[in-house]
Length: 274
Image 1 (tube, rainbow, N blue to C red):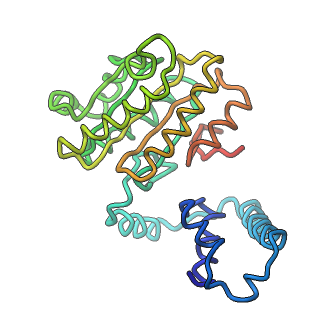
Image 2: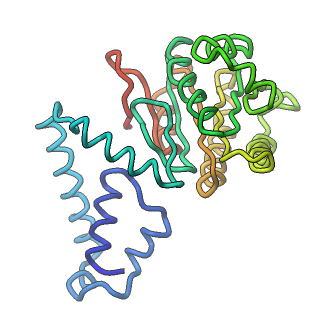
């Protein structure tokens, strides 16, 4: 890897946290770095990263209202959409995402919940994905009704097994308490089911409203394992958290374990940062 390649990857890392861990290690260990790069101390490299990050933050603050022209955004979406690596999320604030993306939604009420999950699931069904909605606060029938309003033909997807409504009790707590390995295996079994039945991949969402504070550590263990498990497979995951049940530390934990965390601020869905 040449220095120019490293620079491009570093920019992607700072802007979108794009490179995989293996790519970042290649940047750090590359034997092709120029003498100037090889001679940099860890402190100097960290100083350069901080400089680039601060520059990005300053630009964002000084030009908060600058947006991508619609024609350019449309062309970029078309080009990215031609790649099998990317899927249309159905979530406006996210747009196209890579397969293997692990997302969290922090919501205040059921309206916010369905505002994101309905188009997310709808897009997956349209794109030949097996879709599963693991319900909790919003029950299976309510989830079905919310989807039916946007998709009058929803029952056709249900009948052929492409759309599935699952209970959180069967998915997370078969023995009455959160079972991390069982929940992870459930995701992987559902993914194998998707491939076996000719679907492009798996699109799933699970609600953690039921969780007791005493189970939080186990849940974060599950999120770590889930993030690793789906990273390199054709799956998209949205984990849902109710804001009123989360402390500030809880939200930081969620942000640390998901590629994107979205919540509604001033009537707009936005990416959330610590």
